[in-house]
Image (tube, rainbow, N blue to C red; front, side, top):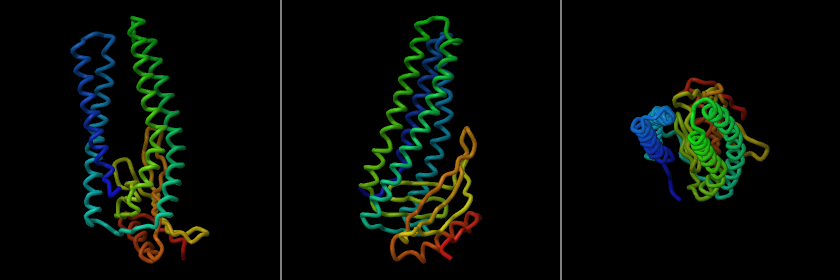
Length: 251
């Protein structure tokens, strides 16, 4: 599998969700029944949310395309097969754990909101049951995606090009694209380090603001053998360009 612009997929998904939101709004207006006004509300949320997502992902897609063309690129490295497999395994475990936590939060939200709507939002028990079943169906769909995505991502990473593209504001690491300069995102520091087995890594630390506050994230960029000196310069450049602290643990 060659180079893939991950953001283009999310651009397409955003367009689909915008259309679904518009369809729900129109359906709610056409039905014109008190018990179906929730469709207008949910549709409006989908429409607004994914219009914002659309422009975010278009920006990401354009930035990644420029990196693939060698524009705004600080480094481009290739890796051995064993390095690619190690990265895929690490990413699988992290995604699996993160998705489980996310699913629990979403399930709690659905239960609370769905319960309130079912109790206070309907006069007809049949309409309430339809709403509950719809919410459960959506939750089940989200659960399936959350549980299956890590495994699918793991398989893709094993097949992805064993390459890394590093830019001043983002990196594409063996099929995984990460941005540390984006809306609701703030880079905090850049580290350059090695472990006991002399594996060198650039670590970009950043926060993403979410509904429950700023959440710390990291982008770990492995360094291939023979590129250690170049990687140190790249890590320093990322820190300088983003005006954050550079922590060189090699010195």
